[in-house]
Length: 304
Image 1 (cartoon, rainbow, N blue to C red):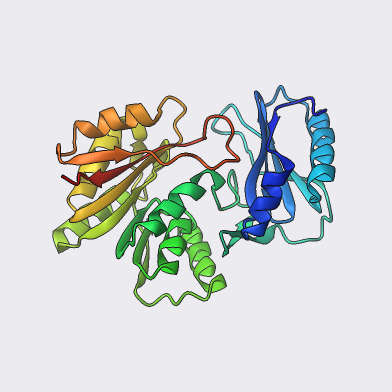
Image 2: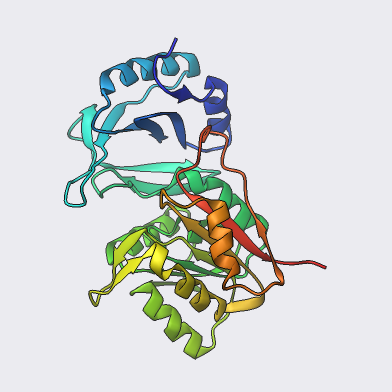
């Protein structure tokens, strides 16, 4: 019997693989979580957590599921902003590239375990990416786009995308994700700029989008030294997005701030949005058996 945390059923892991999904959460406990990324397991622990017992539990789960990681990275979660939380190789071939190709619902993404806190794909947003594809998007604005996973998903159903992020390297990885899926980049833009500043510029041009994705960091710095703080700047960010919204627009609101949940997002958004909208919460993926790391809600037009 596994001693730590709550592990997904082995059959669920096999079900994911049958649907060409090789990125999902295996387990979560009070001071750790562990996720699969292709052939790799990424273990994240708080400083007080001992990874040795979790690795024993992982071996037991692997025997049940029929999947065994060929390498394991360990990331000790930091307490101070100046501390590093880049994963280090715990088991496996050290000569292998830290990059790996993974899949989600048949789409391919490159992850990089040397790139920092997240290797390049947030598995808890899988359900929202599926929801986006199901809504027949035409023009998608993906802000704080990171490695453009939402843009890849939208482009796979023939939407035109605009991905904006302050990080040029993240957008370069986004382009590679397009290439991995043989998605032509014609009709898709990748803009490395400060998001709030660029949104105001887009509004002056009169551009409109029918799907807008707002998933900002809790804290970030712009290229001009300006800071972004979610609790302070979220209302202004949403107002800027509204100026770019087509009449039938739907907007994803998301934050990984530990002090926010979906209800708090809704209350904050109601102070900015017109009364003609509804809020739709997409259930988290089944591998997130406890609270999802991100609070998310979709703003949709009310259908009277």
